Image 1 (cartoon, rainbow over the protein chains, first blue to last red):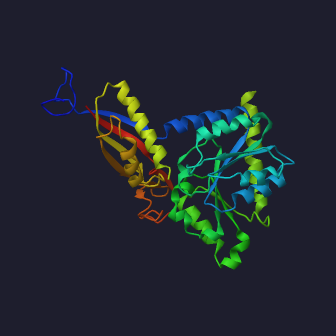
Image 2: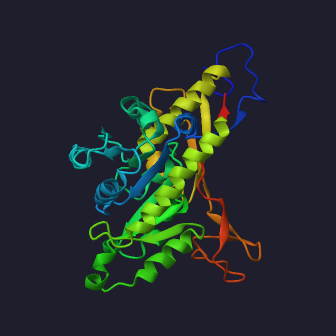
Image 3: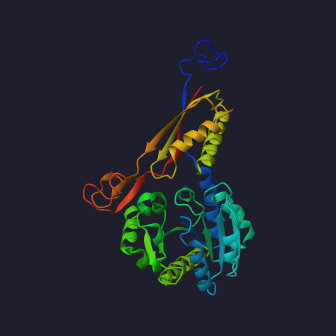
Length: 245
Length: 113
């Protein structure tokens, strides 16, 4: 140990005036994840697959939304799904029943999917045979918001049963999303809530987000969501085709 | 609770810097955490204590600087605190803005011996 300052340095060249050196790092903690996400994004671009990262709190209806969406769109586009849950393959089984390829990731202790998990999940898909890939994230309104997976769009699902103030309470995940789906609008009357309030709170925390109101159960409003998916999916396929030529 | 994984990342990144810079000991670590980053500073502090154990960071003091969630009003161009202003510009009342800061999660600097 150094007798002058007690700092633990034993070398002869130890200079006390500069003993506490500063190292400026400015390093993003998530830079590793971001790099892997960019790799995934590059892969999706090369394979012309449009990717949607679906986030929400648990029980907002992501899986039900996907089931109905797949049954309605699988005749016109090739769809795949990556399911993220802490435990069980219950969601993957529900999706498999619709007849599209699905892969379940069990995150165990983790509360979100990250780009590395997606990179490995992609091994089981023949990406060149897909037009649209859904990634259903772990149900959680906080953590998934920090992790880019390489997706084209992040869509947040907010169900009417959660209460209209969730965007104000958990702004982070709404701020980073390009689309908000307000689900379970078939329950508006029973819940005695105002749909406009949900839309206005979502818009308040993210003025540029696009809002669609749907009921994955009854199918109400789902056509707008399908049109959005068609526009983005065919747009990417055409756009990628133009870049290639 | 993704803070444990993030803190492992932080400690790994710093250990890499330490190896490259021939550092004996890290005295201080400065992190920037944005107010809407979805990261809880208290949890990072707790995890840091656990993750740093047995490394050159063991005795390091952890300083966390919170970064306010700032938006710039698209109408009057004034910057304002989104959380304090309830996502509306306090100057002109408009609620259309661009995000300027608040999602940070950065290792800002180290103090080393």
